[in-house]
Structures are given as structure tokens and as C-alpha cells.
Image (cartoon, rainbow, N blue to C red; front, side):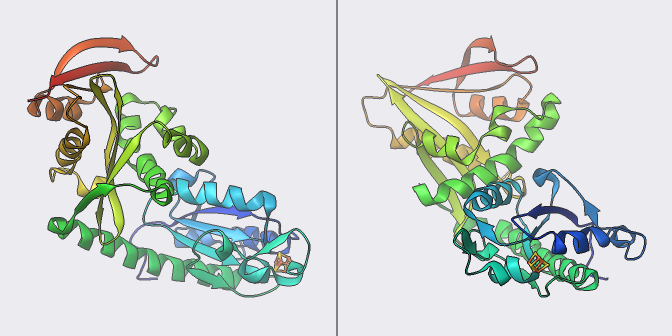
Amino acid sequence: MPAFAKSPWVIHYDASSCNGCDIETLACLTPLYDAERLGVVNTGNPKHADIFLVTGAVNAQSGDVIRNIYHQLPEPKVVVAVGACAASGGIFRECYNIHGGVDTVVPVDVYVGGCAARPEAIIDGIVRAVQILEVKHKATQAAARGIDKLVYEPALAGDIPEILALQKVTYRSEAEIYGDDSLPAMQQTLAEIEADLAQWTFLKASINGKIVGSIRGRIEGATGYIRRCIVHPYFRGRGIARRLITEMERSFPPQVVRFETLTGHKSRRNLAMCEKLGYRVFKTEEYLPTVQWVHLQKERK
Ligand code: SF4
């Protein structure tokens, strides 16, 4: 399989299958088919996965779970619908509680036919998924090179799932700095970030329609609070974070005469960038056992 540049990490979710396709999926890992010999790794953590493999049709309960898992996978990612049920609802299509195939809730890249899908077909589907992953990976890298085409504008409610996925990718490096995977930004759910829309204004930086950076701000009295400036790892070191902060400062009305932001005490790059933009530390406080908040402020000029 020459398309394999790295081991594909796969997360499997049973949406409501009869278990036929699940058994065949697990058979891929048995010594007879031994997908691991090809480098395929079965993971239970969506944040570690490249490929999202779904069996069974979508019903009222599984639709939200599929969306939730999908948005936690880092970009680029590929979705594989395994079996007739995952493709269209299959033999359960007419059931009162079935909404249809996986593509009724998230975009599907590869359809594996069969009822049940054979292990050979599932492995073939993963090989196709890896090839698509490579194409998406190259497209992301190409977009990173076309940095001058970046657009900075307010984010809409429909952008929030993409911003959440970006946030989870972005905060991985912070989690490594602090040795703590439980950072609230990593754990935030779609419902929580959608609720944030009521209090915060979001800006996004996008290129060719893909969001690569985001920031949020809100006003209290004469102070504009700026939080969660995030930039996709491929796009770092290109001034996008600085521009996002500047755009957010500009978006505040004239009665805002002071800006305030914060970052973790070990996030040296963030601290250095804020200081370059004129922010100065005015207090620190304990946030988590592993993280202290460093609060920075700046007067409007
Ligand atoms: S496609 Fe067939 S084997 Fe697979 S989950 Fe549906 S009914 Fe079961």
C-alpha cells in the first residue's frame, strides 16, 4: 500500500447495527485478516484518529453521537460508512426510528457495500480512506502556502462545529505543554460552545472556505475581553494570531478603552506575542492544578 505515509488510526462507532458489520469489522483485527500488519491502529480516542468508521444506520440517539465524535477528530479526517445500513439505512430504512445513512449527519468519503460488509471490503475501504486522507492532507498544506488569500470576518452559527474541531486540534500542543489532557478547551462540547455564542462574538480566519483560525471577544463596561485565539498548527508562525487579536480589538466600539486577555503561565509564545502587541501582565491566578492564568491588559490608543 504505497499511499500509506503513516499508520492510519481508526475509530469505530456502532450507530445501531445488527452487529453483523461490527463482527466483520472486528474480524479485520483477528489473525486471519490482521489489519494491524498493514499499520492500521484501532483507537478509542477520536482525538487520535484519522479515520471514522461507522456501522449501522442513524437513529435519533446515534445521530448526535456521530456528530460529536466527528467534530472531535482532527483535520484532515475521512469518514467510512460500512455496510448497507451505514450507507442508506439498509433493511432498517423504513423503520419509524431510522433517519437514514451516516451521510444524513456528517459527510461520508467512502462507502463499503455489503450486508454484512466483508472484512476484505472493509480493509479495502480503509485503504481508499488513507488515499483520500493523503489528498486532504496535501490540500491543507497547499492552503497553508496560499496564506495571502486569508479572509478575516465574523463567524456565523454554522461555523461553530468547525471552530470547535479547530480548538481541539489547537489545544493539543497546550495539553502537551501542561501535561494535562483535561484542559477545558479540549473537553468543550458542541452544545457548550454554541451556548458561548450568546455571550461572545467570534471572528474567524479562513482560506478557501476552510477555517484556520478563530478568536472570541466580549465587552463589559469599557473593557473588551479577548479569549481563545486559536490557529491551526499548519498555519502557525505566519502572523495569523496577531492579526486575529488586532481585528478583534478593532471590532470593539470606541467606548472600549481597555483590552484584556489571558494565557497560561507556560505558554511562552502566547506571552511573547501579547507583549509584542503592547499587552502587559497585571495579575496571575490559579486556574487548574497544572495551569496558572496570566492576565494581560492594554490601553486603547
Ligand atoms: S448492513 Fe446488514 S449486517 Fe450490517 S448492520 Fe446492517 S443489517 Fe447488519
